Length: 542
Image (cartoon, rainbow, N blue to C red; front, side, top):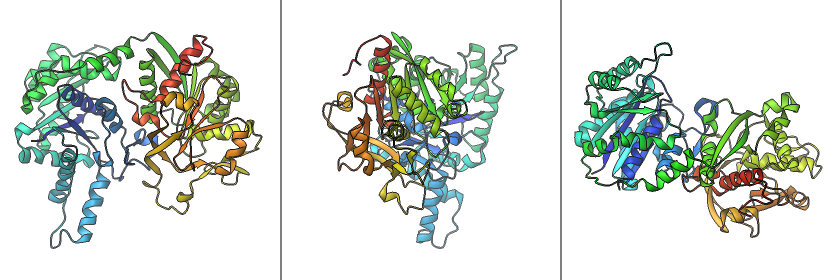
């Protein structure tokens, strides 16, 4: 019988629910169990695709083209799963489905209400996620903070699931902040107590509590949390700050959380296998080298906007036994003060990520140009790929004012243009080129040396692409499009073989990067940064 674990958060948002959920999943996985995960986002948007990254962090893309919350990225990285669009549940998705059923006549004669119709839809989707994968356990993270009005239908649904599935098949885990006062260095449990009381008011009694704090909670704080949370002390755990988020499953398991969860749900798990995970963590926290990467973006004020990219860089770093120090630079800085571009000489590599719209693009193009002209290892992803094409067209091919029609619709040289199938598209939600598509690589190229295969699948999220009318002049001047779609219509990777490392991809390799199995593009970039720093004539992988 499928078991269900529900993770809620209190006191404030971004308290660590996603990492706790992923960590519980990992603790179960290393014991031989098969978990899957559902993320509930109470916002009314159908998906995250139309939101600015400053509103909710990056948009994570699944194999089937779902534009989801960034927490699905954490689940995939920790558990090495390929989740689906259906693993992200939003208020918009639920209400849209119920309204469509009402219009179809499925509820004829009835008044459609939050309870039972909305809550039934929520429960059905959670259960279906487990059935689809044949999972032993479905972990469900309820986004937002306990007490938020928009989260109430979801909390009511998971409350009902205990009555339907039974105590022995359901577990409620609650994570809440335990702040430490600066003046007295005293740990304060009152915010957590209020959070637990709010859950109880809704009808949910937590089975375990994770105290989120800057450091390990002391024995007195633990006893107080257990007393006011009405749970045994063995059910209270300290989720304190770690050097790496990938240490969290090890930290919590050492405190007994994994054994407690298995015992509580009736799983007879006698062994656990952390060897591979521990090897990766050791590479993260005990590196042999260090490189400094400049990430030149337009959402640099919120690092969660680039979380999958940052993690992919760290995965590549761990594979190279290297600490990756990322500095997030706002691209507009180089537009306001062009002299600042020289600051990039202080970095071992320059990374230009995704983005949309004209803001900051000239600053990004300046960063690309600086990397190319000064032969600093460069990696561009999606928009970074497109802007590298524009920079090369302008400054090497002498195509004055070359641009993307996304930035300047009247450009005399639209080297990046809207995909033909996007013309006439009016709806903005879920209409980009999304999900996995096959890439074919040219032999004897940097791309082939990195990926070591002629064909592979990668995830995409874009509307614009290289204009085929300009491919020949770009190639004539030395730009190599080493990867293409299988029909040859779309350029997927570009490189400059005469540079130390200059590589860009239209696809998002970071979405499939995993601990111990990094994206080849990201690993190659970090390896090139190390090799150049060590004075090697060519990157090791060439």
